[in-house]
Length: 577
Image (cartoon, rainbow, N blue to C red; front, side):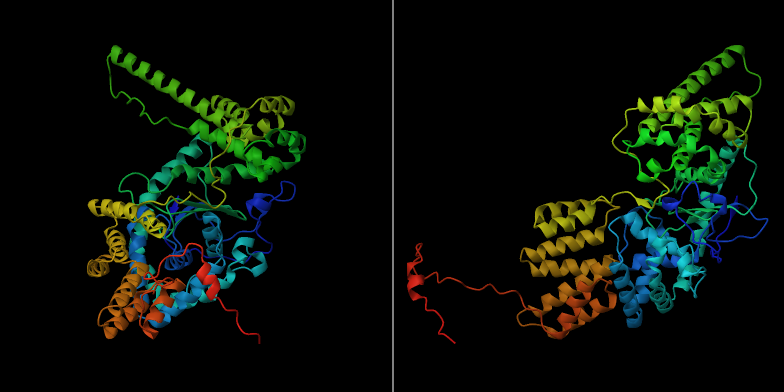
């Protein structure tokens, strides 16, 4: 497998690039689809890369409030964000360009987290390297989701130029390369093991490519896998774990199996007509409509599920092989342990096949048994795919599928942009409690964060300062905001600390207007892109902040009249106009 940290680029193609959601088994073959990118002939078909266009797009999302799973991301994500914030703080033009960019992103926001990020990732796949950042295909040839946001590019180019994003990329290039190196060896082992099982030859470039792009500026929980023509691309973000695999090898293998299996299934489209009745058996399954209406897609996924079941290993480590000449009793003990381990693995694999069937992948067991025969015969998947497809007894498989009791839901499909639902915890939950008026709960969460050496001390201090302000202790609140300014690097937190300090100076007796204006101006310098921050800071600069005044509606010195009779008698209608 080739490893590269160079920017990926795109090349023109002659026909639109359909996505998995709109392909048809009768008209579309993965081998014939247009491609999003080109590589050198004779190079590797399987590559691990980073991409500067993707880095710039992902960095722009971060500058506009994309904070998903920041606490789980590799350290380079926070470092890049700090560098961007420093560049923004030093230039009003940079902040203005950021505001326009973020306004566009806000307007084109999608409620689905995965699809929202996915539309920009899709666009990045078709961009030339900076500073041009232009599509390398006609606009009509862009995938629909990318075409929806293509007008962000002029704003992105201006923003990148104003903060010198290319320099930030170069500054952190070594960290990207270090993350790539961590992923390279386990990914290579996984690809080789899979090829060995399938009797696949080691791939060289034949017009098709499997590409893994690493982008730490995205959420580690985000999996964005796409098929662009003959390119199978998966975008992943490493997490901040110090040991183990920083990305999911299981997800990478799943997309790699699509890369291997799809051409073998799609090339036998003529045999699919007789298998259409199988679709009636999955109409009540918790599958996407795409799989309920496309027998080729359903069959492809079932083949992949069967392969994954054969490759599944139980968490328990296998017994260690004996080395050298051993006594007969030692060999016998090893054989017993190995047999027990193999039996557990076989049971676990069978349970996995059963679960796959209950999730709607009704042909998994059929292909699992076919792959078992393939292992015994010593043949490869290329040789066995045709006999498995053409030799299927459709009516028997249909009857078997009709006996399956489906589960209620299935895991997200890696071939759709998907992100795990964001769970509100920690300081985000504390701020939500503040909005609800639950000061005690918010304070408890903040105190716990301060007690945790790895907690978010800056936001915790900020939350406690706001609670002090709400409870009428301006001196303690001021100290808290000052302390937060020393701890935090988050633009929004910094800006609102300055705004609150400015308001405290405005409401002092007597007011210290010069200090208040200085705080508002500081907020304008370090602010985030959200309009409420800018509005509050500019309002403070324009006029002193005034505490809300309560109107006195009753005279407590007068006796209370529950009937309201006196008020009615005192009422005089306005004179006619």
